[in-house]
Image (cartoon, rainbow, N blue to C red; front, side):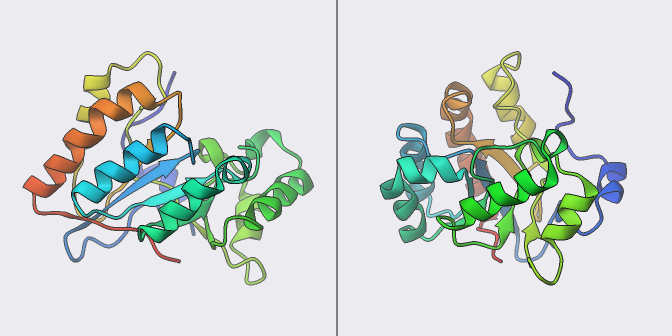
Length: 208
């Protein structure tokens, strides 16, 4: 499985208008979690964040919100922000435009947010430009660092190291609150939040 842990500069140039990193002000770093809510993994994440009084952003799949509305409510009640990750985790490169947009609109009915992250980071220029248009007014949030928790070939130690060596103000970090990522996440996240605290960084949510 090929991917880069840290987003290369040339990829950012290919997708102008998308947010790959936030200003390095206030010593803030941004933890994000994709694909939830999940009945076992999301509570673990929320408990871990609560222990250290940290905030994060959850890019939720609409169908999972429908299955676990109480978890989605808890995310919001505990002060985190949420974003649209489509209704059915669609790959924009493999989806007709009308199908992709309809799926996002469906997810938006249960996920009240103008933040959007395309599943797999894969959407066409046309799709992204339409979402960022004055009509849709969506803010496309990509990432600075991929933890690799989704990679079955990556060790949990390497997953943790991917993040810990890139804890710098303004960076947007991607984890997944999903069953697939659970084993690596349960190992890496507590160590990462401890490191954030040691470095005196502030883990904050992304706002619309």
